Length: 383
Image 1 (tube, helix red, strand yellow):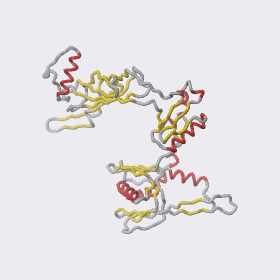
Image 2 (cartoon, rainbow, N blue to C red):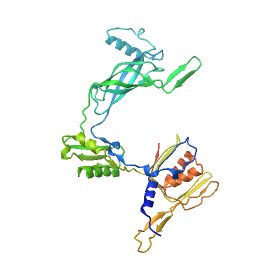
Image 3 (cartoon, rainbow, N blue to C red):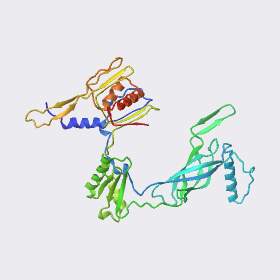
């Protein structure tokens, strides 16, 4: 018998890179053998997994007054006071009774000032009612400043509020769709002050990984060094420092444009994420399960490692390899656990559960029990 060849190793590698998702609304079994596992972990560009240190967004907040509502505004003293203050700015003095209206609402404003934004550019604004307003539909936001944590005004918002819901009803019944007390102003704020982005100081820049991982950081540095020379090195799992090559010292943007197109295969920790509220299970293909027997209700599943050493023919030039056998048997109505040869990967365990119609919540409970038994080699994340 010859050793395991290259095609078999490719297939095995594809199996280990499985990402399987099952949702609580899904009831039909999934045949994982029909899926193309080779595309689960494609090569990705560096720009899609990192951010540039020093080029970051900034949060903006503000308070404003929405007018033009059809009797669905605030009844609170806060709205009355804001109306009086606004009219005072225009030289009109109102008493408290004259400023009362159900056609205005006090709202909070939030926005993110993206990096490289310059004065005159427009950004989106989120609008949320602060008082007891019933709906913001049909309203218009009066001019309102947006400030950052330093207290300075960086943008000014104004415009019609777009609401993705409504409220309608009479004295006996009311119907509400989505959230009518929150809306957006697409491009509703104009940037008045920019934030300098210093991403290349002293001929050096840093890449921040969105999902910190030591292996991925090293692969990013290796890819950059193969293309530009020995200029990059990882500091930790989340930061890679790059010294600008000499020809790019005066043009760091040109270096970034060439560097971010490089492709690598990112790595990830073995992790299983479960959400018991929705019945969602997401499993990484690099999760491993030790020999274990599981009984859940009338379902009995046993997982056992069964490696087989394969020896090459004499003088055949092959190599000795360990082959993992997969022979799964399930006892759905039995009352006792039955040990049987099986696999050590999550993929085959899931395939068995799907074939006998196990629900996502059954799978969640089984995985939690396997983790408590110390047989799940990976992080179990409860969302």
